[in-house]
Each structure stands twice: as structure tokens, then as C-alpha cells.
Length: 351
Image (cartoon, rainbow, N blue to C red; front, side, top):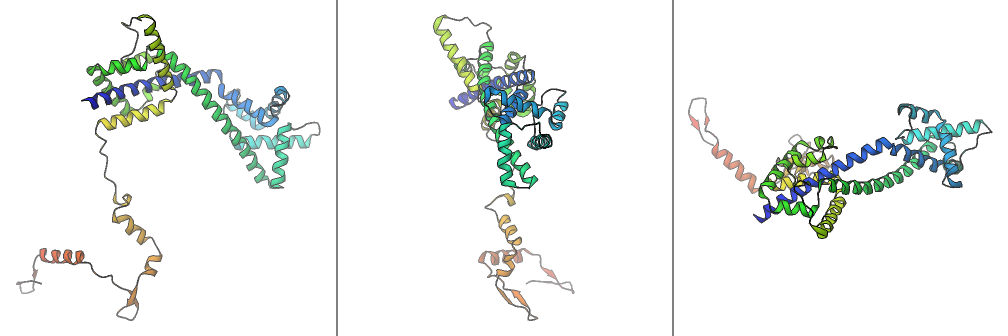
């Protein structure tokens, strides 16, 4: 009883965190799209990559201006409806840089950005006249920079998820300790939450991802005991406890919706006693004979290494392995169970 109560409470809490994390992620994605955060971050990173961070950012701005003039970057901008692209492949970057360098080489008035010039000089020393190697070096340089940019973006997004998680927790009054207490003391609510969680596990998270504005309705639909209806704040202690509870909810939301969805599926599977599933196929079971037979049949050295004798015609033949007691018993059992043979005269014979 206690174990079921604790498991059902955990399922309800994880379901609440999954819904809140999904909503926070969706809101953050919407904000980033409207503010074109990724495109701005990409341009800032490209400017610093080509021009460096010196001279108060003037070198980076000048380098980005030169990059925008290339046909490759212009094509990427055109495919983004005339706006700065939010994505650029390593190949496209290398093509744009080579175009920029080629234009600078054919025009004495054009000067390459300082950091790009230094990088190209290093790559030329390594690749000599090999253009393919030069392209590969530029692509690696770009990938390294984008990896750092991605890490920085993830850290920034995690912090924003915490801010949004706290705001949503206050909005729907989802203090983690309070929700746990409500679930623990309400069997009917726990049962409804577990039923809703099973539906979420079967249907996936797509319906919840589409419901950003209706986060309160989403929580109500899955029977999570949150909300301000009937709640009357009771003094300073109530506020301190709930602020800490909202903060705990925000910290847990920062983990992300995929984590909570995966954990929710595991808890539901554990509650149902496991999914049962299909037994392992013989060729997938290392303890079975099938993998060993397949390995033997696929091993060309097996026939060579097997002991050989001399056949009836004098040709080499594989020596028969000693018959085991088990095989002899099986053969005797088969012979004893076989129907008696019938002779041509119609009388039965025995072995």
C-alpha cells in the first residue's frame, strides 16, 4: 500500500514537471523565434571568428560585413526570406571564406580580416596546394566555433528555462512540496493522475507541446492538484514556504521536458509490472546456440582448422566428432518412438 502510494505520488509529480517543462520550452522557443536569437548569435560568432574580438568589436563588424557580400551568404539570407540566416553549414562557411579570400586576392584594395588571414596562413602551411585539405581545415575551424556557441546557448537556455519555470510555477501555484502533499493525501486524485499519465505515455508529448497558452488547462486535464482556486495565503510562513516551493519547481523544470518524459514512461512501466515485451530472439541471446552456430558458419577458418580424415575415395574428409551421450540418447528415443516399418509382403518389421 505504502509503495503504491509513493509510486503514484512520484508519477503525479513527474507528470506536473513534464507539463511545466514542456510549456517553458515552448515559450522559450517562441521568444527565440520572435527575437531571432539564433540568427543574431550566429552572426556575432561569425564576426568574432573571422575578425577577432579586438578593436572594440570593430574588426568583427568589418569581417561580418565582408562575409555578407559573398554569394554563399547572400543565398543563405535569401532562403531565410531576406533575414539573417539562423543556420549555416560548415561547407557553406568554407565556400564563403574561399570566395572571400579569392576576391581579396584578385583585388589589391581588399584586405582580409586579420584573424581569417592568420588562420588561412596556418592552413596553407599545412595543406600546401591541396584545396580539399584547405576546405577541410576551414570546416573544422567552423565546427569548433559552433560547438562553443552551442554550449553557450544551452547554458543560456537552461537559465531562461529556470526563469520561465518559476513564473509558471507562480502562475499556476505549482509548489513542489505542496503538490506532493496534496497527492499523498488524496487517493482519488492520485488514481486520476496515474490514469492521465498512462495516456500521456501512450500518446507522447505532441498534444502538450502545442498547448502553451493553456498550461493551466493542461494541468487540470491531467488532474494535477494545482491552481489558486480556494487558496488563501496564511501569513508570512505560507509565503516563504511557497516561494521556496516555486523555486524548487523552477530548478526541476531546468532539467528539461525530455528527461521528465522519459522518467514518466519508466515509472508507468514499473507500476504496470513491466511491459512484458517479446522474448529475446535466439540470434540476439548470447547464451543461446544460434549465435555460436552463425559465428561458426561465417568463420572461413573453421573448415580449415577442423580435423580431417580420409574418405572412401581417398579424398580428405572432415573427421566426425565423438558422439555425445546426449545425442545417443536422443537418437535412441527417436528410434523407439518411430512407427514400425512395413515390408513389401505387408508384415511389419522392427529395428
